[in-house]
Length: 289
Image (cartoon, rainbow, N blue to C red; front, top):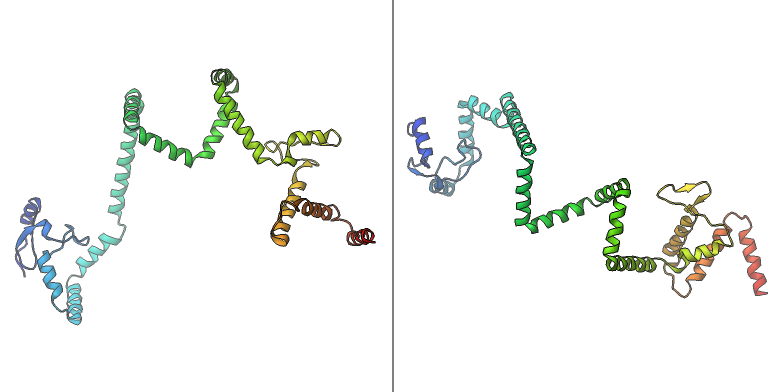
């Protein structure tokens, strides 16, 4: 048996930052021992020099296997206890974990109670911290806005709708005092809308046409269909044109695009006719005769 084991002496050495090597039985500082998660003190039993020397000795695997087996037979209870302590969720560990959770919850409640009671101090400290860390405040706000765009938009819409009458005078005052900025923003939005709107979709042109034919409007914010009033048909027609573009023609040149659209209109308007093909052939034959 190597050396006597004195628990009090071990504790005194540990408090002084020292440890005895199991192999050479010399005392070194803790820095001379490698870390080990399997040991109770978190350090290897042998110093680094002894460990290095042991690794350089050729190992007899069969002899090592027999030695491990003999040790396990002699220390079966200790090995089982170590295994239960490491891997089994015993009641004692569960009880300690619940106690830690209760203590943490109690600490959170005490902190919340203190913050509620000393709201002015908390707000003052927060204002000081924000003044001293403007970059971190801006970065945090940008991250939050990027992550919660939809939520902030819905929240702003609800607030504006709920406080419309109260905010109306403020809006008018802002417009009067910032006339140049408001006009510039309106001009940018109008230009962007005109760039994004093709000539055939201009609402003013549609209104001129509606003077000679029936034209109705539906708000998708309220409903997508009101009887025969909907946009499903035109959306389906554009989907058919896109399918023809991708699947059949693969490209529409600007010069011949009206002819492609006219072809799609011709086929779409006669999609329910049983004699559409015969009528088309007769029309082409009559045109070439």
